[in-house]
Each structure stands twice: as structure tokens, then as C-alpha cells.
Length: 413
Image (cartoon, rainbow, N blue to C red):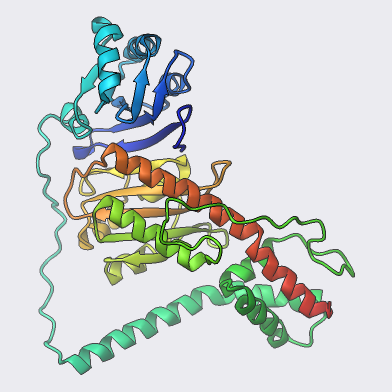
């Protein structure tokens, strides 16, 4: 998933309504000046069995005749595999080049707007009904303001207790490792080390405990845990203008990722998940506009049964245009998402420079068939790229700073 320069190609998966399959979305910005542009091998190498490959050329400022002919050749090649090649929302320069040099008999389909992709692949686009609608719940008792506050307080307390139950085994393991490694008198002393380093470097206790378990053991008698480590400055975050790059912490960056994603996607429902090595899935870290049942059920997401799991597996953004019918969801997951009021969703991975998924940001929409405009898709991909690189920096810098601090306290260094 890339974006930003003329020689980069961004990609995404669009799940079609009515379980009609999926589109492989590609796009390029800037100048398409030759048949050697990386867009063309990306088109030809479309994997799986998509209904079509769709190319967004809305950001192309200049397109040569050789590039237009290469696109037509791609259409012929995909046609032999019974895959249609469609161009969505071409810019004026791209449309001119295609009109002159895009061979009419190549099978290339040119569509004026991105949303036309859906109507071309699923002509009727019926308003789907959800036949799993639950029975109407019994009316809740009317509560006064004080009682409502008490109910919310108790719900919050239950969530906190549930979180502690999930986190306790991980922290207990880290305490055991530290007690043995530094010959501490008991696990309480180990917990104080974790707590002190967590507070000093603003790193969550769970994150620090996981780092203790996963980081290589420091050398025996070593004054420093990571003696050869070079500390670098954080990567820039121009896609998150509300973040102060010089003083940002993980919580501020994650909050900004969700805020900016919801603003771009024009919705009020969404969540950010982070990869959790301990649980082996994606864990919800931040959310807005989603009900308690959704948050409880999707607290940790595994490798299957959801669009965010698919996006994490493929390392590219996934758009679900109809939650009610898309086979990517397990039936129970579908039920919980629909209960929360979501009929369409966009899941964008937060990836490192090497394409490793460190998290996911998802926006949810009340209406089905919500396809992103090309500019929205590019903006979300920029967030995913930049936030993923920042999270990778945080793991190898701030979290390791906290481990180094812990080591110093334990060894008297």
C-alpha cells in the first residue's frame, strides 16, 4: 500500500454488494509517462479471481500515448483471464490520452465516476434487507439522571475488570521473568520496576510487559540492555496535522488516526486496533460511536471472519460495501456489526515500511454501498503508511527506552 509520488502505486480491495465478488483497486498519481510505469505490472499481476481490476486515474496530471497503449494491452491480457479492466474517474489528461491511444477493441472500460464501478459490476444494486433482524428488545426502564450515571459507572467498572482479567496473565509472566533475571525478592518488586518504567516513558503496562517477554535477554552483567542501539527521531506525520510531532505519544497518535479517518470518511463510527502478539490478533485500542456489544465481541479479532482480518492478512485497504451480504464475515460477526448500525466499512492497515501490519483503522457507515472517492482512498492510505511507520519507530525507540530504564533500575546503573 503506497501513495504519494509519481512512480508509486496504491491499492485496495472493494467487496461488491450482494456477495457478487470483489474488485482489485489500483491507482497512481502524477505522471504516467511510459509503458514502464509500475502501475502496469501491478495490473497484470492481479491475484485471485476478482470480478474486475479497477484503476483510479483521477490524480494523473499527464499521460503519454505509450502509457495509454500499455493500459489497453493490460485490458487485452486480463480479458484472456475473463477479468475486466476498468478505469474510474480519469483526469482530463488521462481521458484525452485514452480517447486517442486507448484501442477501442481492447475491452478497456472507462467510467466517469468511482461509484460507477459498483453499478457496472452489480447493475441493479438493490437495497439489501437483513433477514437476521433480532426480535425487538423489551423496553428498558425509564431512569432518572442519577440512576443513568450509576449504570454507566458500573458498566465502566465491568469493562475495567474485564481488561484486567485479560491483561493479568501477561503482566504476571513478565513479573516472573524479571524476578528470576534480576534475583528480586518477590513479584511485587518486579511490578514496581514495570510500573516505574511505564510511567517514566508513558508506555502502557501491557505493552511494556509484552516487550519484556519478547525482547532478547540482556547480556549477563551488561550495564545497558541494548548497548549498540542508535536512537532516531520520530517519522513525520503530515497526514495527522493535529499531532505535535516533537512531543507526540502513542495515545495522541492513535486518537489522531481515528479522528482524521472519521473526518475523511465522513462518518462518526470507527475504531483503531493494534496488533497484539500476546493474543495473536488485533485488539481495539480506540473507538467512537460503537455500542458495548460491538466492543465486547471485537475486543480481539483473529485471522478470519472480519474485513479487518482480511485487510491485515493482505496488507491493503478493504472496503465492504454491504455488511449484510458479504461472505467475508462470520454470521455472528455480521450480526454484531449490523446491531451497531454499520452497513458498510473501510479497513485501512497501519503498515511499516516493509509492509508489516501493526494495526488497523476502520470507519463504519450507516448506509450500504459507501465507496470511497479516490481522494479519500489516497488520504486514508497516507494515514496508514505514516501511522504504521510511527508505531514501528515507537516500538524500537520509546518502548526500548522504557526497557533500558527498567534495566538501569534493576541493576543500579
